[in-house]
Length: 267
Image (cartoon, rainbow, N blue to C red; front, side):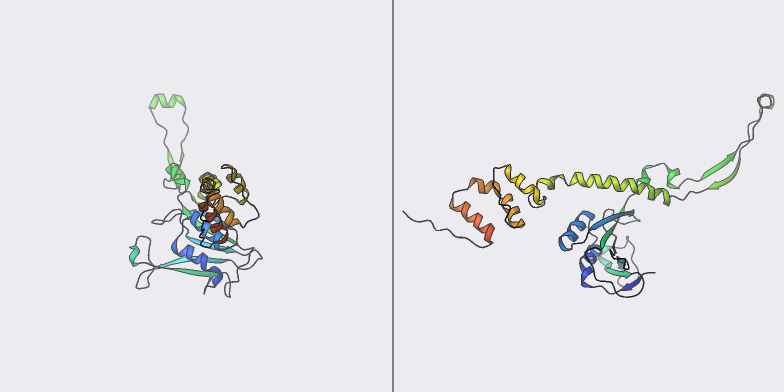
């Protein structure tokens, strides 16, 4: 059983994501901005009352074979008893709990460690008939054979005997469907991320000169990346005001991050 341990500064961003319950897309962006570790996610079945698409817990898998660290939430009422998802939110206190396999404190986070976010979703199993969901028992029926002459003479009907009733375990089938659901989620995420390809603040750095060429703006690729993004974002305005005091002041302001005042020479 994992042992509950005190947190360290390396896990504070992960704890915040889990405690607040970030949406998975925001959680990945937040962790990528503050941490250099690869971030993945794992789809799990949503519980009753749980918000789908929000991070339930996080798992830190060591890249060097060390113990696995789990960060999960602990929901309690003011009297300290566990709170369900149906309890009023204004009465629930949410805390982040760090659990480590084995003994000892959480190990320091290294660049090779992988962060896996557990994201509850509604399984594709709900779209299938009840027999696949395990809600309908299946019966095995043995029907003795009778010849056609006896059926015409006596009007007898075959007698069916139920020998067994089975309720199938759907956990294995649900995990199998999660494979396809994860692939479909990955595809839809890429489709949703298409607008970011042309957004100067989020696009890949290699795309910035291409985006700047749309408005015939010459971008100096030797500048720091954040300045390149800001110049491309303002490229249309800079193109309209080029050669004017306003345009020169704005370029200097972007490059120096300092207030600029240009006093034109009086004739």
